[in-house]
Image 1 (cartoon, one colour):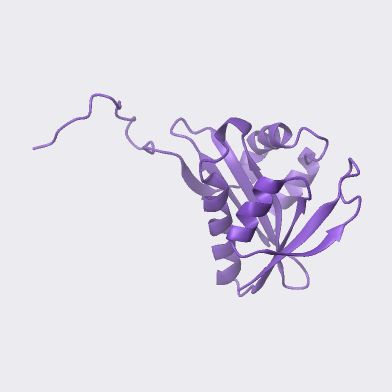
Image 2 (cartoon, rainbow, N blue to C red):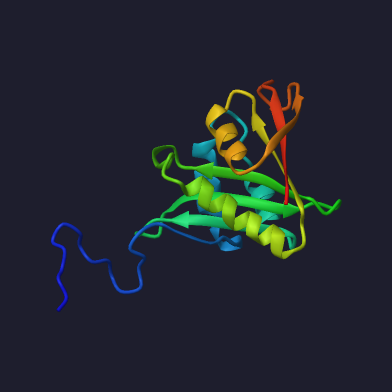
Length: 165
């Protein structure tokens, strides 16, 4: 016998019960751009042309977290660089959706894609002031390789972090 929970309405047929990670493609460019603008309001957001390039590149791995109403809550763009290293180019989570595990899920998805492609080294850049992101990356096995003075447009320093599989 099925018991129905009264505190949670059933989603429409075919809709997820909770946010899920899905591949992101060229058709997601506008929604990704809008979310990127919200996540990186300090001038570090990508323009549409750069996102168009990243989303359509044949060596990119792009994922999104979508809500039960099909809204993009978070995204990640990874790319295989010419030197055969993986590069986490962008990771953004909507400000009101942070600390829910979406960044961890997206990192897992992109790292899995890198591994399936034979990539054994992944790098990323992070602001020296972004303690939360640094903790996440350290938890995932990334280590700080070097400090990059004035790496960001704002003049902020960045860290280069690397993970070896």
